[in-house]
Amino acid sequence: MGTRAGSIRLVAASGAVAVVVFLVVLADPARADQVVMRDGKVVAGVVQLDRKDRSVQIDEVSIPFDRLYLVEADDGALLWAAGFLERLRGYEILAHRHLAKQYLDLARKARAASDWELGWKAINLAENVGLASRDAARIKLKLTKITGTGSAGRRNKPLAKAVAALDTYHGELLARRAERALANPKDRDGLRLLQRALKRVPGSARAQKLLTAAAPDDFPIKGGPRVWLRWHLELERNGARLLRKPPVPLRRARKKWRPDLHAVLGSPILIVTPVKNSRIVGRCMNTGRLACRVLGQLFQTDRPVRKPTKPLTVFLYESRAEYRSVSGTGRQILDPVFLEQTAGHYSPRDGISRFFWFSDPAAERRIVGTCVHELTHHWLSEHNPRTGRRRPGAFPGYWIVEGFATFMEEGVYDIDSGKWDLFNPRARSLDVLQSADPRMLIDWERFFLLPQALFRVLPADNRLTVQLRWSLRPTIVSTRRMFYEQAAAVCQFLYHGDGGKHRGRLIDFVCSHYNGRTKRLNPQKAFRMTSAELGKRTVEFAKAVAAGWTPKPRRDK
Image (cartoon, rainbow, N blue to C red; front, side, top):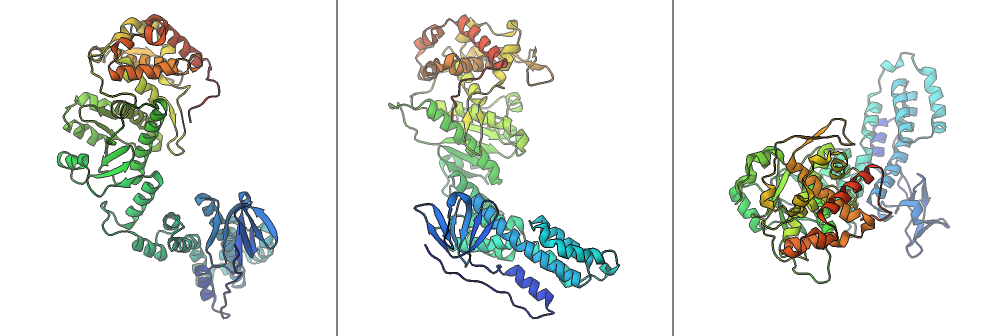
């Protein structure tokens, strides 16, 4: 693909310093076609793209794409870019090269006007954006000769304004590139470039005009065009959409909860929420979808018993206080103490998972684990292709319900990249079992037979002290909490231990429980180990992990 070469020249009359400077700010630097390389170099000339060989030829020199950030035509149109972040880096390099030259030119003018203070400021700014010291050496020498002479009191106001104006150049460059991208139906980065431009220069008139033209007038979430832009980009990045026609869960929630709710669908998750922060909604959505993707891989089958007909509904509250006060408005009125102690829960009767979200990234790990735990319950009840009906609560072996959900919770999840690993050397359940006094554990024979009804009568207020490896202070757990730790640790052993040979039996056991096949819920039949032996092997596995054991290089990606 060939392009024409061209240039833009800036011409101004002598003495019109301020006019010259502002023309420089508003116009692109003179150039032909430009190739921005990953080593920071910029090559100008006439380019030809060879997409088949993945290279660009400029002035008879061939450069492979993997050495480039971007290629631009002489009119600023994008010919090729490695990706959005690489494109941004390329624009940053172009902006810095231009700014370095302009700052150096201003430093010369400041020296000529005997404003040494402004001259040093311009030189420092030039070097901050990458100007080589040798290019500034001569002007530095001249500035040194006049520094401290008192002439700095005669401030050159037009030059000072010019230096300040150049601070906005990078944002204006991005706004111009966004304008070109928005005019090109094939360029999908226009709005993202516009968002970056507004971040660089919030008051950019060009960027604000572009945003006002792009934003719809009927967007249901109040806050103006910038709120729409954040939501649009977040939803686009996550492959989700804001539902304009209210689904049934939203209509019901607006009557019982609050009228200003909106619904976001990103299959297989439907979030009903009043939260206006698009990032928080996106984090919750991505966590839920990642958990469902992991479960889908674990329980995949060529002979599905059922196919999901509706998404998993999540109520996302604005705060912990709202979660506590509103969560009991469904058909299942919840214990206030339970709501006080939890960060989320799944209600089988309502078919809804309920959460609030920590906006602080440092506290997000806890809510991510809670989200994965509760959506595991939700997915196994409503979306598992290998189970056909809900599990009655009176079945024995309730340990697998909470154990498998806690096992999933203890995995390592990277929400941004979508990567995951179900082996976590810091899994709390394994740490508790390897350090707890054996007398603190629930008897294994009794443990594996407990139905949900008897689990609920386990003591929740007694205090068992264990010293975890990852904590300086002793940790207090109750017998009911110990049930969770034992259950999750058993799942950890069955999934990872013995080279993973029990993994298929663990998945089958989960399905047997949810399908109501009570004859298959005996550990001896399911895992070919007695209850006591399985418990003993689990504790030994926990101690091995504490001693540094890791699975062989097989990771769940």
